Image (cartoon, one colour):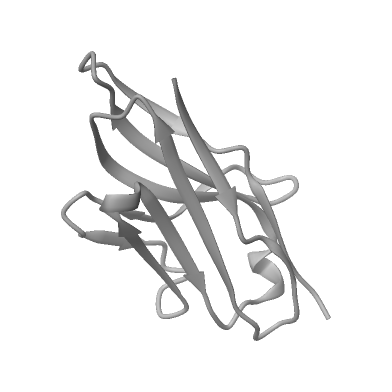
Length: 120
């Protein structure tokens, strides 16, 4: 069994910052790409940022220069530092990880989601 547990969401004023964390635990042999997605009301889930096990990153154009993704491989944790937040960043943010377990089965796992609300 593998679990992804997210933390760090909340309410913040426009221009503020938040840092999301997502820790993976359980039967983990290796973690490949980890990422953050978000889903706003009435919209489809979209990729925010992703990071490979080697540290290569990819960010959506809408968050480049404001959001930074990073990971701590020793802690099986991925982070999303969000700066200069805008009301349009309001969404439920989901962690995602491509994990190989000890039986060498490879599966995509999702976290439960954490709400980020940007409002004055």
